[in-house]
Length: 136
Image (tube, rainbow, N blue to C red; front, side):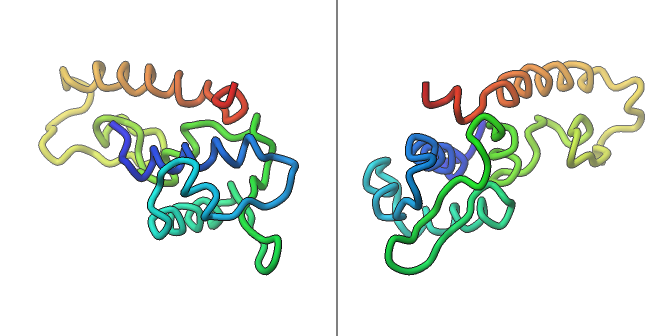
């Protein structure tokens, strides 16, 4: 399950995708349009900017905008930035692998193959859904 923070990030990115190429978008506009608390949204957008998904401009006419084309940003990237691992257990994570402390042997673990299937199914959807596809 993704967090509310990740849902808000995706909703904000939807607005920024719809406004792509038109210049910076004010935080207040995004917050109002998607019913996201402004202070919470500020932190989310800053995190996305710090990870290279967004850029920002200060001053009059400033705001946030996508740093890259919407077709090059997928849900998996956003969820990893906001929530961390996508995998249901740490031992099957592709980017945040950690051996399960309650597992004696991963090779004989009955749960691990099922969790790999769950991870792969989720990744298939998340990686296949770009911001461009999302707004259509």
